Length: 450
Image (cartoon, rainbow, N blue to C red; front, side, top):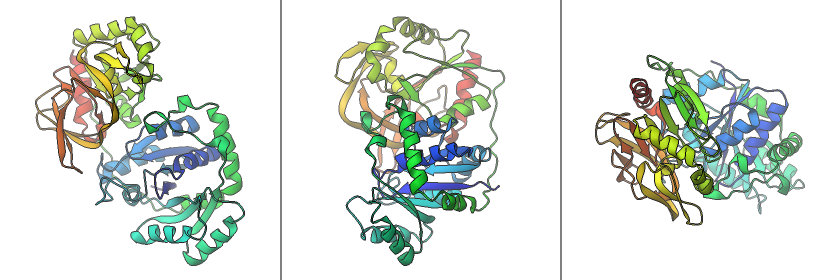
């Protein structure tokens, strides 16, 4: 299958790849291109940026979560509907699970999907020194997939000379540069990240950035590189379907906005009808639902507002006490506690289904990839069954649960987590459903049976 595609990767985090990728996406959309975007790794924030720009779903591709065929399948099922696919890398290009491996790196994803790579280099404070940095990335792995480079934060006056030297000495295409423009810089804050909801004048900034890139990026060469890709082959994945159409309430607002789009899409392909609601603004759960999905997000930023919505809190509590099946992750898990602290450490009453408190700490807790293994038979898993997941949170709970054991293989650490029984799965880890299709299938089946 012919699927035009290109990846924007970087030498390190903070090199400007998110900003540049967003600008490229916006410029392509402004040109009338049908565009799909893909984020390497488990991050939710960048796909939200991408989806707000292109007006379509942006998905994650993560080689820790899925095997090679599943990774290509998840890419292909979205890419085949568009004109061009844009990948955004994660961290530095070769950075993966550990300092000893490129597993789950942008480099590994580029190899598995046979995607050409444009390397972004932050050139602030450099001129000729750019060349040995680029040379190192080109030569570290002979199959690097790197076919071009974009120079970020470089002066317009020296760009032509540096471009000439790179193409003369390294035989790699220089596709342009990005000057520093203060008005389009997207600042980070909470958790070191920021959501699109929080950006003032978001679309105006991106349109301005796209206009700048139209003048400084060689789009003709970029599109040619993307089009000159090999055909991609993969086996279709058989998706099991439940008997019936379970109605699942999905929390979706500023406080709860972290979902893997492929997870939601998979639930629908299995037969579910997803009904969005807002724990911040709605008075109660939607009518006639059979299950509840509470995703991650920033509930701590809205703790007072969530607490004041007593009718919603009571609606959820009664539903859970009456046995409604529920999956809750990270922020959704925190919301179900007896109380939750806000960013200043003030506790607020929450749903009260979990007999415990969530509180802020000064450091990331259990950050990174984990493999979860079930400690007992329960709603979503049988004993010893596993699923891949990711954690990223500054908050801790006095009641984390013990239904699963989480193994962090890169550091050989493990701990218990998640409240799980015949109706529930509630904990900090964000599950990736395609790493075990039985997990979402059992949840939906239980919703129909309840």
